[in-house]
Image (cartoon, rainbow, N blue to C red; front, top):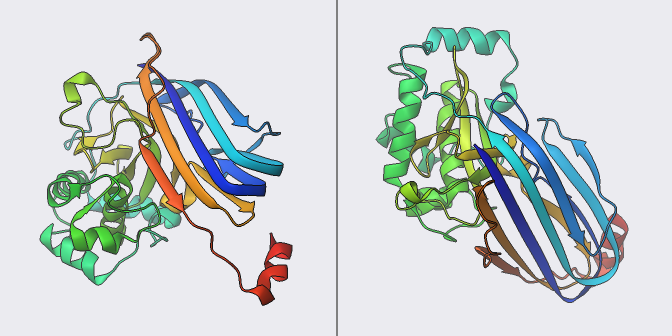
Length: 317
């Protein structure tokens, strides 16, 4: 399946800021099951864009907008081919002994240790007990159970948490967004000595699945990949109780969200800021959809520095 993806992000500042430095992770990955056929990144005001690959092989674009400005608009357009892969078979997957042998022989430590948004807590231990999160059955069977268990235990509520909310907030209220679902599953799986990583990307919402999909249409998506012996990395989407399929478009992988935000940056100035995001994913042979209204809008106020530390902070910037 070939998809056309448009990801538009707009930052508004009041009053104007003096400079913006930003990095962007919006280019879909190319690997064994997916190919990014074309990619274009447009930035306004115009800026010189450079790119590099981070530690996980994700493509990162970087730019610096000098001078006074009240708006930054970043629009990524891509064409990506995603292959359909058969559902993982329990009979073909390995057991716990196979998993231990593989993790002992190869380097998976970054995906086995706690990370910024996926770390143990008392609230997590309670959920782990409810879901019987322990080594039993086979690794693949347990992952499927956890994927469904998180889906049933937590309610998907848009804007109920923010991108930097700790998972304890979602664990306490039993509701959250796709980042929370992914972080919870990662935090449950890693203590079992099973490598698990965070995936950011997009989910194509087919008409046949529109009523079942809980994730927000018109926004980026997040899920996890766990390493299953004999099968390799297998994708699980606890937000929608799905196994990774040709509807999941991978953009970046990391230990958790902190490694792979779509945009990350700083600016000079003391301004109220507003972030809006609009995403469209459609089959490449479908008519171009109209530009959607933003599905995510975040407003923030400036944090004012103390007078005696102002000069030092400007020098650090």
